[in-house]
Length: 271
Image (cartoon, rainbow, N blue to C red; front, top):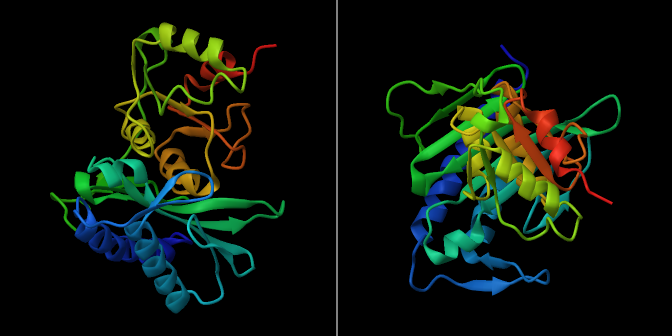
C-alpha cells in the first residue's frame, strides 16, 4: 500500500464534510462576507469549512501541524496539512460555481523543506473532485462522494508544440509589476488558444489533458500545495515561474512537461 493512502482517505472524508457546509451557504441571500486586511473577501463559509477541516485533522492526526488560509499555522513537526477552505472566494460570493476546497498534506524532506504528498481538490458546485497521493497516481470523480462509475485516472496531454497548445492564466494583474508582461503577451500569441479560467480549475485541466499550460504570477502556499500533487501525479510538471521545482516560489507554472521550459523562457522577467 502506498505510504500516504490513509492520509488521502482522510483528506477525501474532510472534503466531503467541507463540501456539505459550503454548498449549504452557496448563493445564500444572507451570506456574511467581510474584507480581510489584504483587501480580499472572506465569507462565513470559508471560516466554517476551515473549522470543520481543522477539527477533523485534530481528531484523526493530533500530532500533525495545520496551516490554513483563514486561521494560520498551528503545531510543529515533520507533517503539515495545508488548507484553502474556498479557493475562489470571489466566485463563491458572486454565485459563480468555479470554486473549490483544497486540502494537502506536506511532509518535511531530508532537505528540511516541506513537500506536498497528498492533494484533494473538491469543487462541489461543479460536481467534480480531483485527488492524488505521492506514488499513487492522480484521479478524478464526482464531488460529495458522488461518482459516475469508477474514478478516472488522469494523464497530461502529449502536445509538444506551442502553436498547438492551450494556455490558461488567472488574470492580467501582476504580470506587469514583475516585469513579465511582454513575455506573457508573447506567450499568448505563440499558443493556439488562451482562456482565463482562473483559480484551481486550469491546473486540474492540465492534469486531465484538456489544457497544456497554466501560469499565475502571485500565489500563496495554500493555493498551490494540493493542485501541485495532482498535476505531478498525472505526469505533469509544477514549478515557480523561475523554474524552481515545487510550491515555494510565490507563483506557479504547470504544464504537461513537454512545453515547460519553453513556457518559462517566455515568462522570465525582462530587463
